[in-house]
Every structure is written in C-alpha cells, then in structure tokens.
Amino acid sequence: MQVNEIPNRTFYKDGEEFLYFGGTNYLGVTTLPEFQKILLAAFQKWGTSYGSSRSANIQLEIYEIAENLLTQQIGTEAVVTVSSGMLAGKLALEQLEHTSDLVFHFPNTHPALLHPFSLPLIQNGKLNPFLFDVTVSKIGIVADAIPSLEVTPINLDILKDIPNDKEITLLLDESHSIGILGSKGQGVLKQYELPNVRCKISIASLGKAMGLSGGIIAGDFQFINEIKKQRNFVGASGMNPAFLETFVNAQSIYKKQRQQLKNNLNYVANNLIPNSCFTFNEEYPAIYFDNDELLQLLLENNIIPTSFPYPTASGKLSRIVISAHHTETDLIKMIQQLNIFTQMDSGLEGDIRFTL
Image 1 (tube, rainbow, N blue to C red):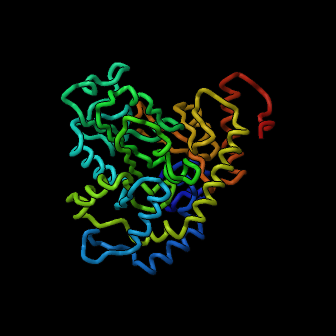
Image 2 (spheres, helix red, strand yellow):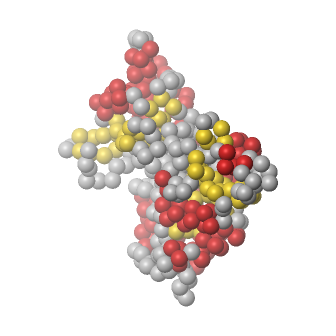
Image 3 (cartoon, helix red, strand yellow):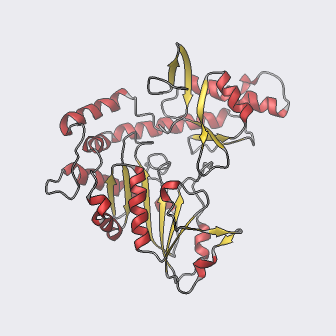
C-alpha cells in the first residue's frame, strides 16, 4: 500500500482511515508537535546539514555535548555518533575484526553486524569448537540485544562457558532497545554480568525510538578512539548537528513518552487474552505473529501492522508495534481483534468485550 503522508497512529488512503501499528516509532515523537518545534529551532541554529568531517579543523560543540550526555545515560566510558545505525555497525565491526583473532555471531544476528568471515557462535546446539582453539586468544562476539521475532533481551549466559583465558569483546546491537528498555531508556548493555567479557560495546540507530537519523557506538575509551581514526569515519560527514541538538533538548519529551509507552503496554497486558499464536511481553512494544488469518483479520478492520520478508526470519515478519502515541481507543480496537481471533482459534463463542 502506497501512501502520500507519513503514517502516524493513523493515515488515510483514498479517503479511508487506517489505524497504524507498524514501523519503529516506539516513542511516537516523529510527528509530535512539541518535538517538531524543538527540531525546527535546531535547524534554524545549525542549518539543514553539515557536510564536514568530524576530524576537520572546525569542531561543532554540539557533538561533544550530545556524546557526553549519551555516555552518561548508557554508562560506558565513551560514545561517538555517526550518520546512521548501519554505519555505526560497519565501523564497530571493522574495529572488532582488527582486534580479534576470530569473530562469532549469535543466530539470526542483524545483517548490519554480519561480517563475511564471521563464524556461527552455535553449531549443532553447542559452542563453536573454534572458541576452544588454543591458537585463538582474542574473540569478538556480535549479537542483537533483542533478537528477531523476540520480545525480551538476549540471554548471554552461554558466553560464561567460554574459557576464561580468552579475551572476549562483545558487540551488541541496541537499535530496538535504546530509548525503550532500562530505567531511563539506556538500553540493556550494562545489565549483563559476564566476568570473562573484557570489553562491552553497543551500537544503535537513533532513527527508531529517538526519532532522529543517526547512529551511536558506545564502549570503552580505547575502542571509541580507534573508531575515530578509521578512514571511513574520518572521510564521512558526522551526524546532523540539528538532530543532536534536538536529542539534547528533547530529554523531557523522551521521558514523558517512555512513561506513556509503559502505560500503553500495561493496558495491553491487562486486556489481551494470551495466545500461543503471538508473542508479547509487557516490557516491549511489539507483538509478533506468523498467522495469515490473523493478518487478514487485522487488515479487514483497517488495522495495519508491519509485514514483510525479513533477512533473518524464516518467512514473512509480521508484528504489531505499540507506540506511545496510540490512544486507548486505538488499543481497544487492536486488542479486540486479537481477542476475537483467540476465541475463534480456540472455538469459543460469545462477547469478547468483557476483557476491555
């Protein structure tokens, strides 16, 4: 379906209204008037773009201000921003390759973190034998903080089974957790207690929960400083300074929207009839399913989820994305259809409105 406007909580096609439960605008800020007001003021201050290298002789102070704020929030030693989440992944992966004997990836890792020579961490249900090779001392491991089709942070306990004499650097993609998870939206990197992991690095796109085009790499001083020396970093323009100014000045909006998202998720959790056909956790704003009948039921009622073939999924990815901008009426309409499907699926009859 092609549309000629940005899908907010609703959009219109040929005069017909559709309720949008797709995308990744988790905090609902991209079309929020008060957020746009901050963004417009930032454009007036910094212009629409700044096509200069971060290593040039003229330095914009907003980079240091925003990166210091991100460092404080995420809890790492340093953060550097780049123009996109994909570039963040490319730069971090390149640095990881330079500092590791071998790089391994968890199953279904996002393509942004897959190096051509990366090895699967798990083989036949067990750790890859190369992890125990005596000639391999420095190991890089990449993973998604929230794996594809999952609604909880990845379990990394298996890394504790890697011999303690290995130097492990963990690279975690937090694109779908930064701004959402953690007490202050800091993501999940710091929650992992992994004694044999020497260095923990995270990358993330800010174009999802934060509503701003750009990416971040967070980690220790040495890793981040080496990123800044890479040719691809030096030769590229930095993240748009107006977006960084917006990030800094919109902190109170992010906080308010995170609370609203939590309220919406609690409402869904309290009223949705559980069903094994879909995956939901009240801490995370997505409901995954792979049932064509459910997809058709939603579409027939003008409820549009995200649905497309995904690189790391076995088939079509379908998910209902709950955002901070959804109203209670929106949630009722969505929940009602899921509950109807559940009753149809279980052969129950009757009025499902008792759950709302």
